[in-house]
Image 1 (cartoon, rainbow, N blue to C red):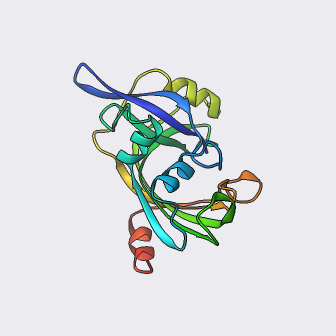
Image 2: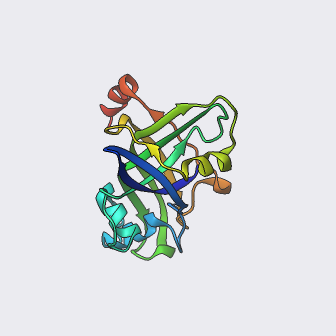
Image 3: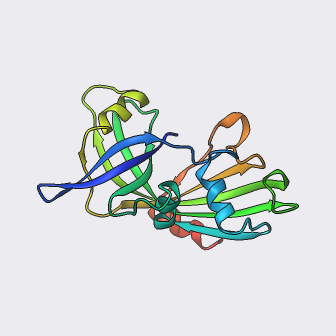
Length: 184
C-alpha cells in the first residue's frame, strides 16, 4: 500500500490534488506513526488518537495544514483497471508493551478512518508506479471525503507492518461498518 503526500489547490474554483511524494506511515526510524506516538507522550497500555490535521502538521513540521496538504493512500493499488485515493482522516492506536521506549513496544493495533477523495476507472491498465505518476499532475478532488470506511491494521514492536512487511487489512463500509461498530 503506497502512502502519499498530496498538494491541495484550487484551479478555476475546482479543488484539485497532486501527488508530491511517498512517505512512510510505519517504521521505527522514519515512520509518521512513530513520531505521532512520541508526540502523544509514548502511551503504553492505552489508546491514542491523531486526527488528519495533526498528521499533516507533524509530517510537514508545521509548514502546512489540511487546506493545502492531504496525506493519503492508493486504494486498490494492485488493481490495474481503476485508480483511487483515500485520505487519512483519523488514526487510532493502542500500544501494548513494557515501557515507553520504542524498543519496549510489543505491538500496536490501529484503526484508520479514511475517506475517498479521488476515484476513476481506467481505459488502459496501470501498475502502482504508473498510477503515482498519473497523480503527479492535478486531479479533481471529490467535494468531501466519500465512502468513509475503517481499516484495521497492526504494527509490530519495531513499528513495521505485520509479518514480512505485508499489510493485511480490509476496508469496512456502510452496513458492515455499523455491524462491527457495536463491538467496539
